[in-house]
Amino acid sequence: MGIKIGDKYSKTRYYDLVKIYHPDSSTRDITKRLPTEERLSRYRLIVNAHEILSNKQKRSAYDAYGLGWPLPSRHHGCEYTPQNPRHTYERWDDIESEHGARNEFLTYLLGNKKFICLMIVLATFAQACVILSSVAKTELEMRRRDEECRDLIFRHRDRALDLRTLVAQIERLLLKRDPSGLGLDPAEKPFYREMLPFCGN
Image (cartoon, rainbow, N blue to C red):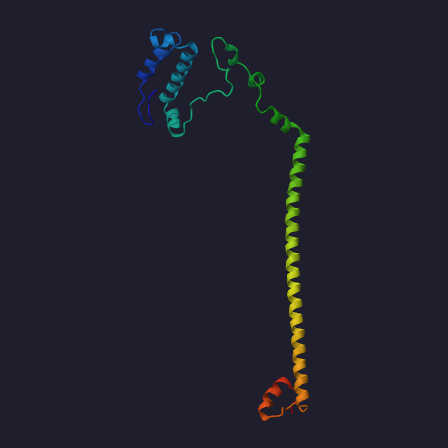
């Protein structure tokens, strides 16, 4: 109807459009060229717009949130026309069965207890696989770290053994050189004491 948000509503535009598109009106050349269905559809749009724009609560809800405007039907061919009046009082189930339910297969699956049980079993199995996989990865990581620690301990032990052997060799060499363990020269005495602490007086 050409009204923007916040504009004041006047019924004169509504009355003008009703005169043009009313099904019983045949005064305009424009409407003579339109099919009856199109005229009826436009007339309904004008009436719906008038209902929203003339009611303050509906207008504020429409301006703020777009609420109140009738949405087009999902099932084409179910609208009321003078040639097809029976759809007005038809039940939704009948319309679905006549035009084909889109979610019939999904509804069947969700209503089937065996299918639901199968989905629960599959979901549980998938979850168990994920948990087992993470446990296996953690276990592998722990084994790898354990092996690294064991290798490090063995390396330290071997080095300690090598050092002990080296010290023993040095002690033997010093005692062969001077069996008294005091050194041949007074300058060697501190070194001998350090290397052979139990041999000195």
